[in-house]
Length: 192
Image (tube, rainbow, N blue to C red; front, top):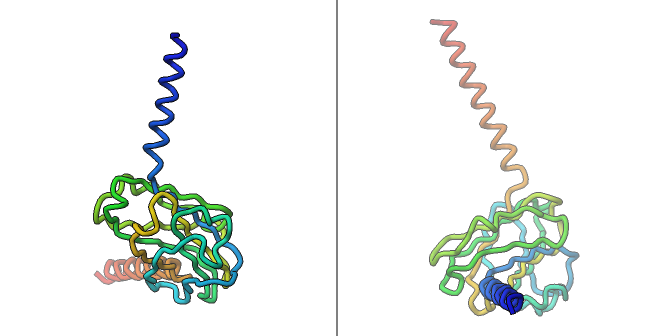
């Protein structure tokens, strides 16, 4: 009888933990070769694209994602690889109190900041960044699937990709400005 109570208590804990996490948002990032279908075309780095979630059973979305609640299908037509992707949205009432868990299905853009948003609050501006690993090649399709919230409750989202050389050029410019300032201070010291 003593062991039966422990087993029942453990079973109740497992059921509670599963039901408490059942509504969390799970984003699945999945690049794959382009297929027929309706896609959001990403052409210009540094541009914000407004996108709406659609059914994961839509034409062109891989069968592996069909069991999810909502999907975003994209094609990279920037003329180069995508090494950083931002997905942003404003939390609506259907998302309040939930957490975000991101899953990557391969070696493309393997890092993310999903765990930075927990729990979600009404009106919060969320930007999930995917980076690291291999870049998404030009003309490659990629998908973001969501599981945990009904398609009809998903907010309109924004997507943007970083300009390929923006960060290295910025860093080089700042370093050059720093060298120029150091050079000016040395000139004043010598002249003074």
